[in-house]
Amino acid sequence: MGEEKLWINMYTSMLRIRRFEEKVVELFAQGKIPGFVHSYIGEEAVAVGACSALEPTDYITSTHRGHGHLIAKGGDLKYMMAELYGKKTGYCKGKGGSMHIADVDLGILGANGIVGAGLPIATGAALSSHLQKNGRVALCFFSDGASNRGTFHESLNMASIWKLPVIFLCENNMYGISMPQRKGMAIDDIADRASAYGIPGVVVDGNDVIAVYEAVKEAVSRARAGGGPTLIEAKTARWRGHFEGDPQIYRTQEEIEEWRKKCPIKRFEEKLLKMGVLDEAKIREIEEMIAKEVEEAVRFAEESPYPEPEEALEDVYA
Amino acid sequence: MREITYAEAIREALREEMKQNDKVFILGEDVGRFGGCFGVTKGLWEEFGDERVRDTPISETAIIGSAVGAAATGMRPVAEIMFCDFMGVAMDEITNQAAKMRYMFGGKVSIPMVVRTPVGGGLCAAAQHSQSLEAWFTHLPGLKVVMPSTPYDAKGLLKASIRDDNPVIFLEHKMLYGVKGPVPEEDYIVPLGVADVKREGKDLTIIATSLMVHKALEAASLLEKEGVSVEVIDPRTLYPLDEETILSSVKKTHKALVVHEAVERNGFGGEIDHNGEGF
Image (cartoon, rainbow over all chains, first blue to last red; front, side, top):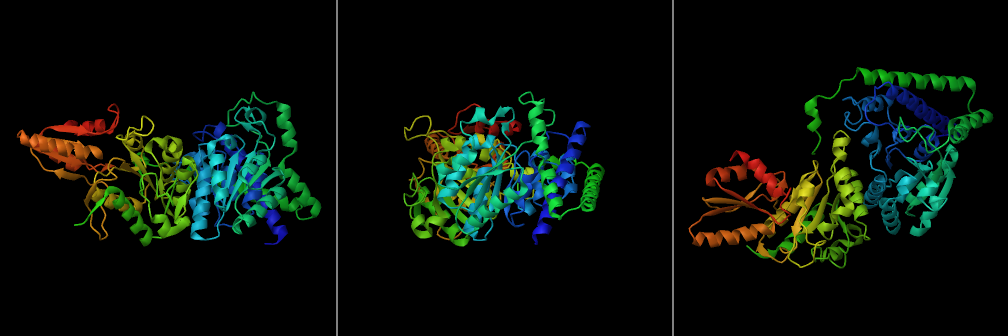
């Protein structure tokens, strides 16, 4: 793929995440989406930068804040929205909902409701690739909060001693619900923890999609070449609360405003405009295309049936 | 038929399945050159090498979690947890990952993995190395739970467990590892979900699991001298449970006694008792 085409795809993917999430926030407020919703707005550059450096056959593990990862890996908004609505036509037949939305066929081994649970699963997928010698890598999205869990330490250590093809990508949005990073750990950079496992630790600006892409690309080549795992810390911020409805008493409005000024999409858009890769007409065209996709997704979700009560007991066993 | 020990029978099952299917591999603490804390995997590292008999760090969470990831992507891992008491360290991976993934993803993934782990007392190893925690696992939809009492069953059930497309918790009894019994040399499986009548009788049904099957059989021999005819049933798999075999025995004897080694309250015995309310 030519670089310009790749950039436009990245821009489109980020915008698709933003518009989808804006719609989800609106629908949740209207009571149309059950369960919990954790918005990815503000962090789009991480998912898109990372997934753009992967092959379609590579694996990812996602988090409770996982809509962006799925879209960046190629998820279809229709099946996503249907899943959020709890409809039978959703990616998981309505049984996963927002926190477990996944398309296994796209190499997605789950969004996960347990913080930090994806790390050993990604390690296992990488072990599987290593044993099957199929050249696939696994990329694990996790958060600053998850890096305090035992799963983080056990997984980085195991992946390091076995030189597994896995990329641990920490989306540091600075808060574990209400707990600021500085209260939860005595270091500034989570990437520093890599040195404890003898692997590279890289800090990137998580609002710079190209920086994320370049860092992940390098980690992916290293992993595919048998060089083992890399820990990448992408510093970013979520614009919304931890969950929809979070009163956010733990941070100021000014802080949120500061991050809105650093919008990863606006920033990339300005860069592409300046480079002449994008123009206003092209942006309008992309916006219109995405608006249609979102509208179609909502219609599909609303028109789809709920699962029958007896289906609640299906798919427990293979 | 030749006789081998319960540990040897398990090892044979592992060796045969690994030979037949290159997707099967072992991971766990000290399972390699050391041969496992109870010697069950002895010789397999020499035969299959580092890649397929993988010594892990002391990281139960990563052992089970990585087994889940490997199983979801085409492998058939057999993880060993040194003592069942250590399963608590990996309980999220068992409860929320292995058991739930298929269901939560609408049936689009299967998790064909086995966790082998020894249960039970008898070694004077105190409260953190002696428990029988089978009820933890039978409470979790998505898991199958196997508890063999003889070398024959251990081999056939482990082979069936490795071939099963679901996560299976395979509970071995540490006091049975040295017990010998007849085991065929040819390939066979014992299907999951089929109980075995270990002794026929007409006055009383004892439903016993794991080591307690042997205790029940001893008791049955003693009672025979007193003129009491005891039937001993070993469910062999706790989930799926062969209720039919148990119920038809109790319909015959009208009396049932459940013997397991776990804590009595909320134990698996209570589950059998509950299922048998219609006796």
